[in-house]
Image 1 (cartoon, rainbow over the protein chains, first blue to last red):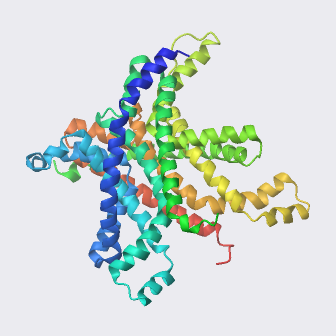
Image 2: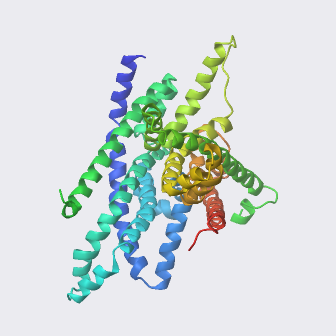
Image 3: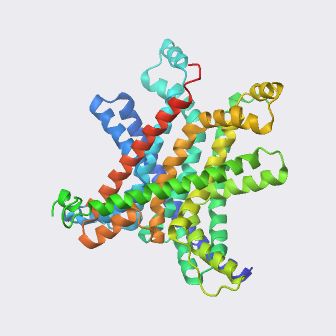
Length: 228
Length: 235
C-alpha cells in the first residue's frame, strides 16, 4: 500500500468536506422548515391543500433523487421564462440546484417523520392539557412538540445520514464535493480501492459524528426518564 | 414537436426506447435485489451466529455499505471490479484487460448495498419470532433444517415483507446511479434523448413519471403480498 498516495488523496478529499457539509446543512435546515409547514398544512389545511401535500410527498418519495436533480438543473434551464426570471441567479448555479433538489426531497420524507411523531403523542396527554385550559399554542409548545420531537428524533437521525450520502449525487452535476473529488482522483490514478478507502473513511466519520450528536441530544431530551 | 409526439411511438418518437430502458431499469433492480437477498441472508445468519469473528465481519459489512454513498460504491465496483478481475485472470496467463459487462457490475453493486439493508431486515424479523415456537418445534422432534423451512422461514418472510418493500424501493431508485457507468437504464436513456433533442425537461419528466408508475405498482404488489402472507394471523 502506497502511503504517500493515501496521504495526498486524504488531504485533497478533506478539502472538499466543507462543501459536502454545507450542502447537508443548507438542505436539512431549509428542508426542515418546509417540512414543518407541510405537516401543518397537511394536518390542519382544507382538503385541496391536504391533497396537494400528499401528492408532493408521493412524487418526491416515488422518484429517484438523481431524476429530481436533473429535472431542476437541466430541465428548468430549458425554458426562456426561467432563464429570464429572477430565479435564474439561483438556478444556473449547480450548487443551488443540488441544494434545492436535496431540500425538496428531504422535506417530503421529513414531513412523514414529523407526522409520525405527532401521531404517536398519546391522546390522553392532549386531553389533559386541554383540561388544564391550555390554549392551542401553549399545547403545541409545551406538550405536542416536545413529545413528538422525542418520538421522531431517532428516525430523523437516520434521515440525516441518508442526506449525507445523498449529497454525493451533487457530483453528477459537476459539484466537487467528496465523491466528486474521489471520482476525479480515481479517473486520474486508476486506484479505486485506495481512494474508496479514504473517501469511505470520511463519510463514515461524518456519520459517526451525526449518530453521536443525535444520541447525545436524545439523552438530553429523555433525561427525566432515566432513573439512574 | 409537441410532447406526445416526442414521447410517442410514431416516427421520431422516443417511446419505444424509453420503454426499453424502463425494462432495463426493472431488470437490473430485480437482479440487484436478488443478489441482495443472497447477501442479506448470509449477513443475517452471521450476525445471529453468536460467533465473534462472524459477527464482526457482518457488522463491518453493514456499517460500510449502509454508511458510504451508493455512488462511491458504484465507482469502486465499476473501476475496481474489472481491474481486480483482470489481475485475477493474469494469474492464469490471460493477457490484456477484461472488462466486466456493466449489467453484471451494476447488479453486484446494487446487490451489495441492498444486501446490507436486507441483513438488518432479516435479522430483526428473525428476532421477532416467538422463541416458544422454536422450542415447540424442537419438542415435536423437528430437526434444524425442518424448523428453518416450516417454522422460521415462513414467519421471517411475513415479518420482513414491509421492510423488504422499502429496501426494494431504494434499490429501484438506486439503479439511476448506474447511468454514470454508461448502462442504458431509464435515466441514461433520458439523458441521451435530452441531449439530442434539446428537450431535457420533457425527458426527465417522463423518466420521473415512469418511475412513479413502477414504484406505485411495486408498492401495490408488496401490499398484496403482505395481505397474502398474513392471512393466517389473527387480527
